[in-house]
Length: 239
Image (cartoon, rainbow, N blue to C red; front, side):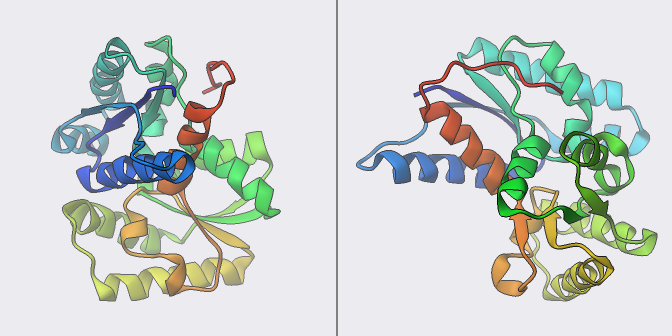
């Protein structure tokens, strides 16, 4: 079994989901008392959040690079950045280490391709919805047509992520608004919805809507386990 490296803390709620899913998936596949071989290095999200909102992405990249290098030194065979938004600096992180970084957008896109969908709705932080590092990757490398909410809804989603979900708060009223936004994207042509922020699954799950949802946290973690349990040699991923 290869050792999975988790770069977490952004937020700790979603990192907890990663840890649980990785271990549950290993146990599901191997049975008995098996659990994952992993290394977890967790950052202080307050510091990263302030860098995000001030636009100092180089400083944020530096924080993640330090953590990624700690993970590599601890013997991990691959790296997962346990957040969608910070994949904005994935290339800088990958350049700083020798082990491969498994990109969350790529794992998600591969899962969607297997389902046959080509028109996807995307929910995430304003950074992920408004910048091209994520949605552009889905379009350019995987050929998806990507739908994002209008500005008012983007602002609302961003506020809920940082002021509720990242603090572990799950609000029924916020869920109603998210479901309305999902319905709007579906009406515009989106065949499915990418939950492109690791905390969104805390609020919206498949039981809440008939529109197909793709939980990036679970997809990312499950693909890492598949790689960890495979006999194939690891290769560096393109970021």
